[in-house]
Structures are given as structure tokens and as C-alpha cells.
Amino acid sequence: ALASDGVQQTRGEDARRTIKQANKLIRKGEFVEAEKILRLAAERSPQQSDIKLSLSYVLFKQRRLRESYDLSFAVAQVKVAAAAGCGA
Image 1: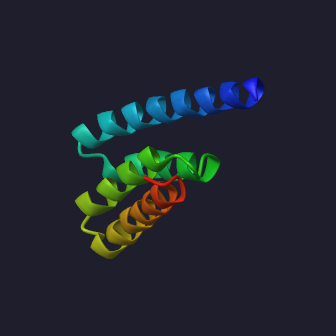
Image 2 (image 1 turned 30 degrees about the vertical axis):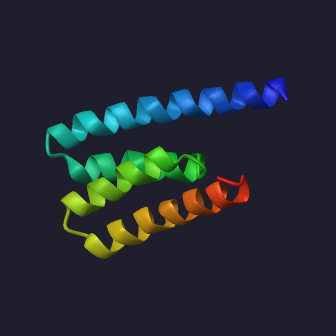
């Protein structure tokens, strides 16, 4: 279990680093570049909802509303299912 915790922590750190990098690009208005790194990160760490939500925001800023909605809705569904599964 400890090795698994270490892997999760590393993924979390990678996710934070990626989001920080994407946020810098977003502030510059470089949405296409931000999208590229967020998509790659989402493929590598599909369980990281923060990355997916950041990607959803970038898609929204590019007026790709349906894609943005679909991605954020999928994240919300997983969160609700997880909460229901643990009795919350």
C-alpha cells in the first residue's frame, strides 16, 4: 500500500505542475498550447479530475462548449458515483 501511496502522491504532484504550466499559458491566451499539455496529462493520468476540469475550462475559452460540457459533466458523474459509493 505504501508504494501505491507514493505513486498517487507523485501523480498528484505531476498534476499540480501540469495545471500550473497550463495556467501560465491560459493567462497569456495560449489556449491551444494549454489544451495540448492538458490532453497529454489527462491521457497519462485519467483519474486526475483537476486536469480534466482545467482542460474543460480551456475548451470553454475556445468556445468549444459541447466538448467542455461533456468533459466536466463526466467528471461530475464520477464524483457523484464515488460519493454515493462511500455512503456520503
